[in-house]
Length: 249
Image (cartoon, rainbow, N blue to C red):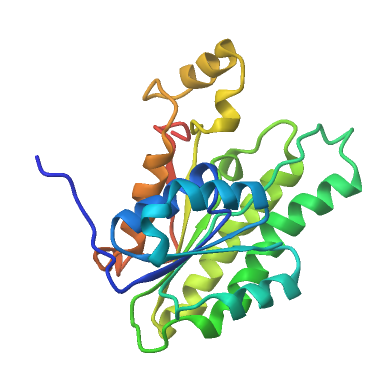
């Protein structure tokens, strides 16, 4: 059985939070498929690491430090992005986990500002940067399975990711006539550097909750992003794809 492959030659993607974790794998997968990629990330350390790791693609890679929660920072990033874009992947996100009783207003504001307002800021700022001649413009928003069923200690994060789903469906209706499809991906338990630092017994407990009996790989999310970005996915709009091994069944 031949694996499905994509060609994104002559395509340009912006990936927020694209210098580490799931975002880094999305960036790498687009580059491997021939795309030019502009990485927007808040961490200078992560940007430097991504630049070194992806040096083979330097001619097709643009990296810039961006605070997605700050509209002026987003405007500056748009001005520095060297190409008209075809694909936007809103991946940037943070957590400030605490029970509702212990969660502060600052914890709430920080997560909502990055995960929800930040997604609005980025998409709004980039609207005119999209390739105006394209009828295959793509926006993929990274939500989370917890937006579908809630999660203890994550009032702020769950609210932000549920909001992402609502925005996705609304933009799918509003922007389709302009040549866009807008979809969301809801990752489940995914192996990243952050999760790999957890105790082994915690990781095993997490994996045991998944019908597929394993945690996902960052490639699982990147593969879904590339599919939704492709011309083969042209009639998929306003939907949420759970990439979770069956966790939400």
